[in-house]
Picture 1 (cartoon, rainbow, N blue to C red):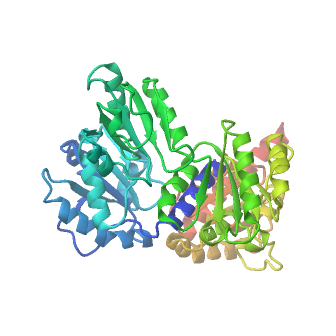
Picture 2 (picture 1 turned 180 degrees about the horizontal axis):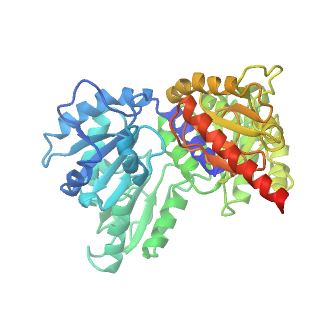
Picture 3 (picture 1 turned 180 degrees about the vertical axis):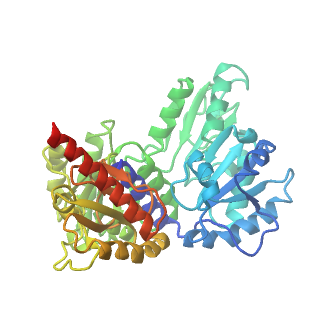
Length: 495
């Protein structure tokens, strides 16, 4: 499970590097953003056909950045016809945790669009500044697909830098049209959808087709693709597969960022080549990388070319250095990583071939092993996890933390008191691992947030600590688990 979480964290870290603004509540303006909690959430949502809900945490810096923008947007949208309601939930509040779990809140802020009294739930994937929020939600609250009646309509509707999907039909009725509209409703938060009776209005593609046909217009590769299978699942697969470039470009151009986010959010294994794209000689790397992408198209692996300047968040997450570029990293869905640093153009194809054949060992990110580890709470890194936790023969309480986490900072002195309590007990170890700087490859540790605390008994039983964060409760937990272990050992001896 830890590996699955690490994939989500990779996406979150890199996505946040693209948009430095995120969402939360504001302690000041509360006139237009409605505050919801466990007591009024269901009744409020069920009474609205369209409502946007932000799940936030009071300590979240990204949330605080969005608060005034969210409030301003709520003020503007309150005057829309019909009004569009923006709400917020403190997901850090214990009484609201069930709501956060129900809506799969894995980080802050998380924004959801709830339609039809909450029956349909979609991720908010729009801008994070007031004007952008307003325009995005106006579109989202309107029809899922816009009718294109002229070339001027098409010109106004189709953004040359975005993916736009247009259905061409001989009439706006029938099974094909109904399925297309169902697709548009399902994917409306991700794409712009339109429909027309005449293909000649569209800027690209055969103008004489009468349909029914779905035309996907895009700013990369072949620029447009037509599709005629109107099964909804087939349509969705076509849109998702066609909307990812053969090689996604990750640089500082904002128009590329939606494709980068889609790349990281895709179910494919992710092959990422990071290089200084302004250097001389980089063209041969780019050319060879694209050749390999062509070779493995449709084989479960996506390709991204990342510019060094734009990739600092990715470097920090993967634990690599600028001195290692050009380098390739492959990230699998289970969190396993494979790395080839300082490569040349001719290295790309044989290395990817070796990876596909299972000949490349996984790369595990680890902080350096501490030269000294004399504090009461011992430091564990990825390279010492096995020896210090699994092979130590001790009862180990291990905290997975993040340096920036406020709750972790509050827990730190308490854990130190617990460690001092057990300082003369050779059978107990209190330890911590920076989960942002070390890979968690063991599936026994399900780290979904910080701090996460686990106890591994000397005989190998692993259990999550979910009690109060006090010295007394933690010690009581350790002693009860030690008693279990001692009791089991005694039974073994009797047998």
